[in-house]
Image (cartoon, rainbow, N blue to C red; front, top):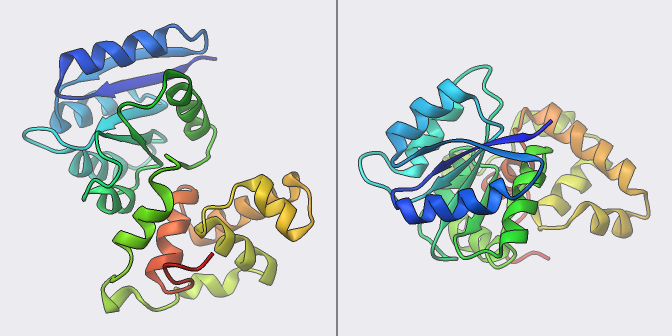
Length: 222
């Protein structure tokens, strides 16, 4: 089955460029386009795409608010990948908190764009390598005091699952976690699935946000 994608950007040339890249892939179909956040929400509800490529900065309704509105819809399994021109966009953290599953720069090479969409559609989180750690450290350094308490649900995790969550929050891939814990990648995937299920998280990105917001790990830890 092909992956359905909705492209959201206020620049027609940008939308056309992404469409050309994605439609060259046998397993992808661009089902629609939108020029602002309001159109994005409407089209996503109508088309129910697997993935939305969502520009952060747009007129009327920006990408962050559109993502928040979209992902508030019950029964909608659409994943959102945020797009920006800058790798330290001040809206990155808000985008992740709104429920976005990934974050890419607009000038990402075509093969990385395609791979990123496939990764998010399969349930993985996606942060451009140049974004991950700096974003976490910059935007979670001073979270509100009200969220710096460990959620009760964390007590439901086993010691190994808690260890896996900490490694996810430090930006480790499944392969890196497997090597560090001396287990197979399949075992890691099982642990990750249990963590997301027990904590009621959409994906790994939300696990990263929770770990830092709650103070489970501190910015700068490696």
